[in-house]
Image 1 (cartoon, rainbow, N blue to C red):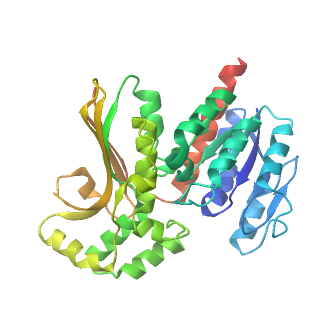
Image 2: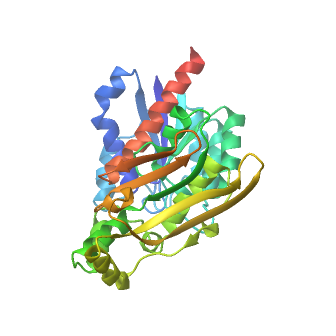
Image 3: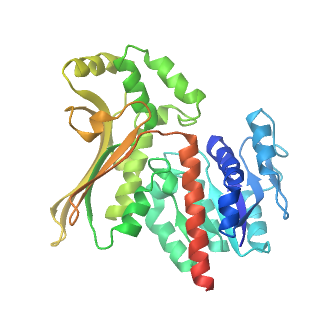
Amino acid sequence: MRVALLLLGFGHVGRRFVHLLEEQRAVLDAAGVTPVVAGIATGRHGSAYLDAGLDATRLAREVAGGGAIGPTPSEHTADQLIAQLVALGAETHVVVETTPLVIESGEPAISRVRQALRAGAHVVSANKGPVAHAYDDLAAEARRAGREFLFEGAVMDGIPVFNLVRETMPGVTVLGFRGVVNSTTNHILTAMEHGEPFASALARMQTAGVAEADPSLDVDGWDAAAKVAAMANVWMGAGITPQAVARTGIGPADAEWAREAVARGHRLKLVASGELGGDFHENRLRAHFTVGLEELEADDPLAQLDGQANALELQTDLLGRVVITQRDGGLEKTAFALFSDLMTIVKSARRRFS
């Protein structure tokens, strides 16, 4: 199966994704999948398109070295490239959306996702914005178009939290969730427990490409709030945006609290949570969504997370508490989420064709 890809955004995650495609060539060949990166569009590095396929790994190396992939400003618009992609002879067309999060509105990513679905392409995204701001509309758009809108990389990197519920928990209602879902802030809090300054711990995450392009999204709690909105919208039908999440972040002044918590046998964590209260079956519900610092008992699953580790606890009606933990975060894991979503689309397409 030939799969034509258009990458919208070519930052750390997008570049790691194209390298992963090459590294997983044997897996793709065994599955009978031939991915072709036909186009790449960026805000800062220009754009490029070639029906036969670009040398995406070479372009990734050039951009990582400070180069460009095409004219800047780009001679192609994203809409033009989407139209070219779906006109290309291939069994499946996929737009891979990894542009930076715009916390205020989720745009222009939302419009790009909608345009791709309407044009007949599937969409996979590591951007939290579309799910946090417009999940219901985009999911409905995907159903009408008979296409997939997948976003496993939006929360907890490559750990399949959305697939876990969608594919393996039929009939289960998620009543609440709580978790440590931002790698940057958990790394900083762990570092400050050991006396490292806030600024140097943050700088390490920026150098590694783990922190958001605007690090204030991480340390001010906005990244976690967007993830709360995404989970609430997908699992609870909340229809909220990140602005509806009660939010506090972390700063240098929290170092003393972090060390004192350890002295008491506790851990200080930035906890993201959401819950439904009231009578679910009688439709008398109250929802509460928050991001904030909490001092946790040592036996709390979230208290046992160091460095970039994340964890999410789901409270369900039929399965009770379910905890999923990611001990090692990073770019490769988010890139794997895109790869995983791509393979899900391939499997779905084969079922339709069979």
